Length: 277
Image (cartoon, rainbow, N blue to C red; front, side, top):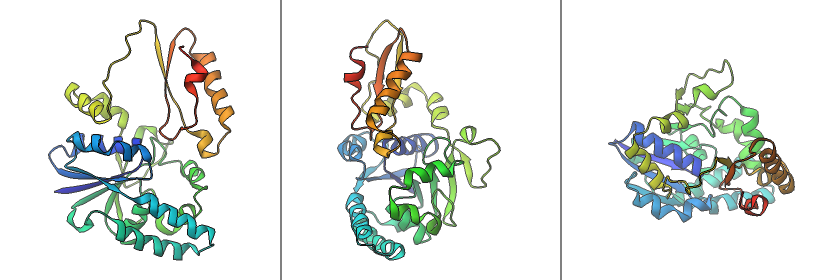
C-alpha cells in the first residue's frame, strides 16, 4: 500500500505524523506539504530527514492561492474560478495521484482538496481542529475572509461532506453532545500522544525539532498556547495581548509563564508582555 498525506499547518502535519505512527507504521507514505504555510517550507528538510515518511514533497500551492485572489479581484464567477484553479493544481502537482492507494487530506477545503473532490477521487479527511467537526458555524466563520473558498463550501462539500470522502478522522469525545456522523472514526491527538511509547514520543519530538526537556526551573511552569485571533480578524492585536495578560493575572499567579505562539500568530509580542516571568 502506498499512502499520500496532504498537510498545510503545523497541526495538520502533527495529525498526519501521529496517524502514520499509530495506524500505518509499516506502510510506505509520502507527505505532500503545502507551501501556503511558511513554517512548512522552512522545516521541509527536517521533516524529510526524520524518516517517518518515505518522502516529503513541497507543493507550490501559494501561487495557486494568489491566482485565485487575483481572479476574485476581477470578479471572475465562482465556478469559472474553480475550473481555472483545478487546471492550475493539475499542472503544479509534483506527484502522480494515480500511484497512491490511499489519500489523507488535512484539510480538504484548500485547492488540493478542491481538486480531489472535483475529480471524484476517494479520500480520508481529518477534521480541521479538535472537536470542530460538529461546529460548522465556527469553521465557516474562519473561512469568510476567503471569498471563493467560502462560496464553494456548498458546491464541493468540505470537511468530508461529499461522496468522495470515505472517512472523517475526528475526536469523538470533543464533539458537541449528541453529534453523530456515519463517516466519523475516532482520532484523538491527545489520547494518541498519551499512549505513545517513550521511543515513539522521542520520534515525534525529533520530527518537530523539540528536545522534550524543560529549562530546569524549580518553580511551577504554565504553558500558554496562543491563537492568532488578530490575524483572523476576531479582535485587534492590542485586545489579543490584553486577553493573555488578563488570563495570566487571574489564573497564573506564582508560576513561571512559557508562551508558545500559534504558527500564524506572527504579530504577538509576548516576550515584551511577560518579560522574564
